[in-house]
Length: 358
Image (cartoon, rainbow, N blue to C red; front, side, top):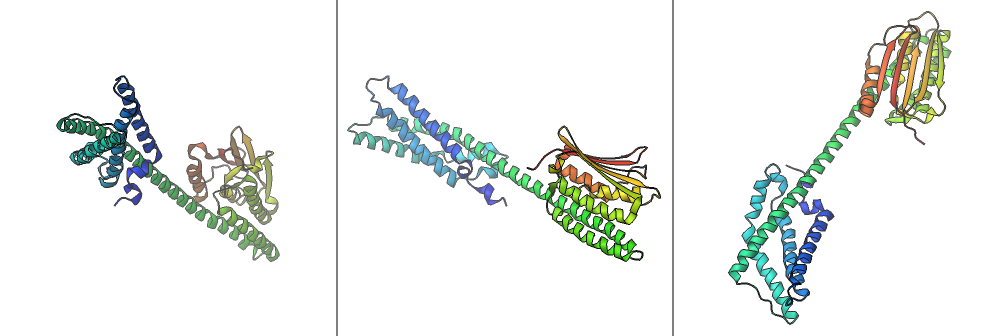
């Protein structure tokens, strides 16, 4: 069963544009008829207006009635000619209504103005007016089917957009739901490792973890945040990791002026800095430098996390997979995540369109 929205008569769907088009059409008929008949010296200015005005008035009633009682074009969207044929079956009925109405109006108005309306024999009138009405119906049925098709297309497009948006939101929620426990477990493992060796430090780290989780939950409520808020979360996490590893980890922050107002996906860079500690700092016995930088290059924001201590590409784990999926959902081909190794270590770089929130 189709929705009620799609079953709405096309007169309601088309709205003002259809009525305006019909009014212009009727006005054109009256103007043309007036221009032609005024060349006849026996015709006064009001007579062509009455003739065409009565026809268009009756036709307007037909148009309104037609939209309310006949089958919806939506049921015959793939068979437009069949639908138009069904409408033309009603031609004798509409002619039986149209011709008496029009000619009664003409006789009545002429009589009120002290004139007598003369017309051809009724047999000729019926044939002429039926043919005229058939041509008029064919023209406007085509126009009405066009309006109905457009309304159907717009409705289907809106439903498609709504469905796609709902799917996108569901995917983002799922990805962030995977990310937050992953981040929490990694941090809790750090605290757990200190419980048997340094209880005061572990207690201090738990307090920091509570602050980090509160900030992380707030950030997780939205798809986007400011870069300065994202970096605040990174710094909270880096502080916890630095207390765990001590002098083995050196954190450097390099930010261009003004980039703090850039809009970035919330929680996007957390798995990248986690990997820097997991694959760079944790397995190394030497001092490891983790460098976080954010730069605006033309119309793009480049957010990079580089760590020494490892020389192979970071494994494509759940964190980096989520980063790529979220970037694809949010930006399509306008964003990317690049991870690679060189002689100095491993570099993870996120490139997204630069946008500021004032």
